[in-house]
Amino acid sequence: MVEIEDVRHIRISEYDYPLPDDRIAKFPLEKRDSSKLLVYDKGRISEKVFTDLPGLLPQGALMIFNNTKVIQARLHFRKESTEQHPGALIEVFLLEPAAPSDYQLNFAARGECSWYCLIGNLKRWKSGVLSREVNVAGHSVILRVERGEPHGTGFLVHLKWDDGSVSFSELLEAVGEIPIPPYLNRESQESDKTTYQTVYSKVKGSVAAPTAGLHFTPDVLEELDRRGVEREELTLHVGAGTFKPVKSEEMEGHEMHTEFIVVRRSTIEKLIAHDGKAIAVGTTSVRTLESLYYIGAYLQDHPDAPEEKLHVPQWIPYVYDGNIDTVESLRNILRYLDEHGLPALKTSTQLLIVPGFEYHIVRMMVTNFHQPQSTLLLLVSAFVHGDWRSIYDFALSNGFRFLSYGDSSLLMP
Image (cartoon, rainbow, N blue to C red; front, side):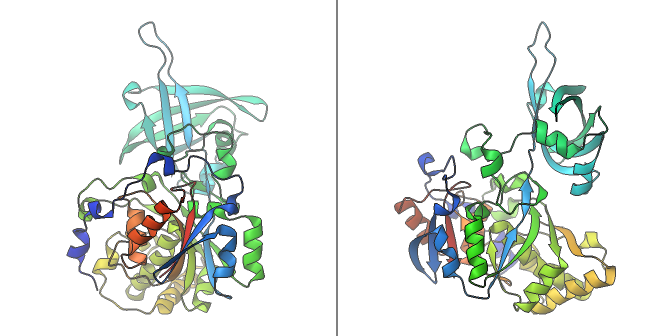
């Protein structure tokens, strides 16, 4: 096992590469599945088209998708103007539901709810209530927001609206904007509401798309089915922390963001039937799947743990000294769900995957090309045993498009 001190002292500067702005895809291709696909097969690199993907996968393999749906998380309010100051524009960026804390219950809330939020132009909103008129299905609703106490890098924000027949979900659809990544350096457009969602997105909650999934079309999914590739879905709600840069020189100074995950009992069963092996679509699916191993390992010694104790801390892979079999770990989760009468595992993860990490479940990965000096690049490096630079050199030399709306890769180490 890799020593925890070796992991803590990984220098992020060693995971840098030049990324010119013109290589960052500002918009997606008109046809999602016509994107380029880099194939990394045990060190050999080739170029394909994304529609080739189903034919590159083993028949009978299990492929796991993240079915989270991006919410229109950016809300804008303008303060009332005074003679001295024009009304300042304030942005409220929804991060995580506070009351109700359950995503589905919060979206169904009528009249009021609360969220933990980032505040844009914070210095101009010291206190008071902001309001705006919103048109929801043809009638006017007044939405009011009030800033509460600090929470992490943001604040608790209370939202109220004057029409109890309107759900918060309906309100967001009317007033919110899709939070496209900041590195696109452009305003969101109406088209992003469609193109920044996977075709299989279902469960609202993310503030960023699981972008490896953006390449899939109904045709590609149908071809996977035809070729006998089994498909399962899980949910990880992608937080704004996915864009959080590593600002410390070494990894020990970086705190991973917490993300909420839901894995159905049937998916655990399917993983066990596939000997605990899967193909992950996107780094969010990777982190969820690999978190399952450590949840099952914890349950081995704490079978009666309350659900809140199943959170996966970031350093656990590098201090865990057990060697439980992957399938046994998954069976522990299955037993836990059965004993508690739960249809799905609901918990959270801060799992940090860096070189030295031992993958337990993911055997192949579909992923886009990530930012320099990012934890996602470290995750890829861990998967390909440090050979990330040859992959990125090939992509840069062969016209691949980078980041969220860019091209993708199939990694088979």
